[in-house]
Image 1 (cartoon, rainbow, N blue to C red):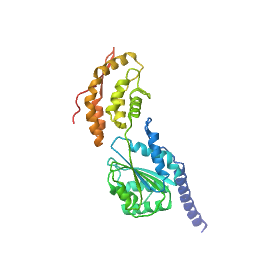
Image 2: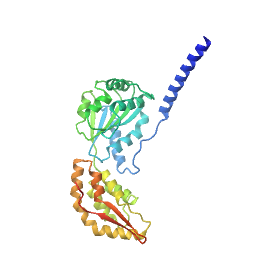
Image 3: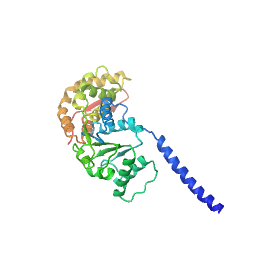
Image 4: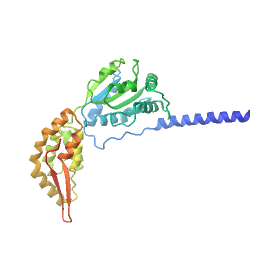
Length: 316
């Protein structure tokens, strides 16, 4: 009997310790989600979401906008700054690029908000039911990034109407996503993310093109021209700025590039309409268009290094 009791107690003790370790690991797991080093204009945008967090009338907020406008970056920043204020939290990447099924997303979500390493879920319906139960018991922060189908919300948040103090952040291009939340008797605030203004655009472009908050001396006109062509879209500004990165380490290179930029600067205006139309419809072609527009082609020799701007019309 003593041996049997010892074995049973040892097994119970091992399970207890394992469960305790998992819970402690969850409590100290405060790793920050990765965000860009330069987030121009982010402080103002975070304040808008913070006001929603403090508003008890809204359970959910949908950050809406075109591709590349910064929805994911904003959601990550809000998550990083506020997650410790909740009993538990979870950031789940959805979208068409995700390899995991919605069932796997459910398991990740439940693992995060329950603090349990392994989750046994037989079906989507069972997973949704468990998530509903947790949200009624705990005050949780959930971010669902890149929702492109309301059915994804049904799978991840369930379909029953119930009261909760939890907060749900959704990023999406769907402007009418708030209609889905009405079925759960939740109020969803639609937050249409605005494009960067002229000053913010110039600053972001400068960080990527010159490594500073302002354009390098002699390049201001080019920077202003490019930032205006990007229409305030952060992704376009980042891609274009990085494509023409200028270093002040070699004065000879600066002279060569400055002369090339001055010779070509008037040609950039022909691309403004192309970028504006893509930004207006919010297509995924922004990055490809920007890279084609500003293709950097280095031609190295022992004497000098020249950079040419490819200003040919991008292929559609």
